[in-house]
Image (cartoon, rainbow, N blue to C red; front, side):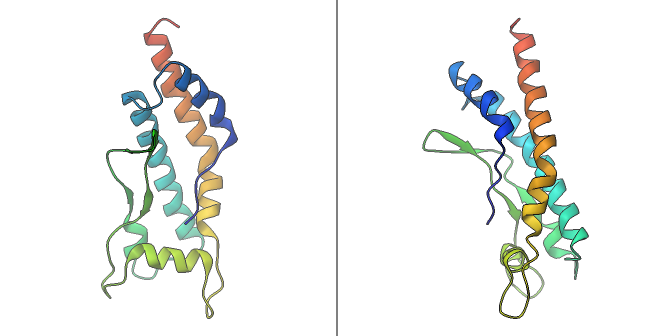
Length: 138
């Protein structure tokens, strides 16, 4: 599935690494706040692309409440959880709607959602980091 990328967070991440805060509780706060923004934008994009049949897939878009560490990098996955009433994984439904199939053109709705969320994610991350720096008197 699509990966969220933004150039605006590079400086913030470098500063966090220099201060040894790239894997601590502040990083978790930033990831969780960003995940909430992205989750909301995924739901908006799915609706705007007309991807509501039963609403199962849209309603199931969520993320783990605790980021995981993979090779010294904190991550959090955001995707539709569980299965719909037909026992089809909601993530599979999202994948097909995004990329398409031989019978259905892809809408690339997740790319739209990530583009929509990027500025707000950058803003929220900067706010949390600047708040932490103020607490430290920096």
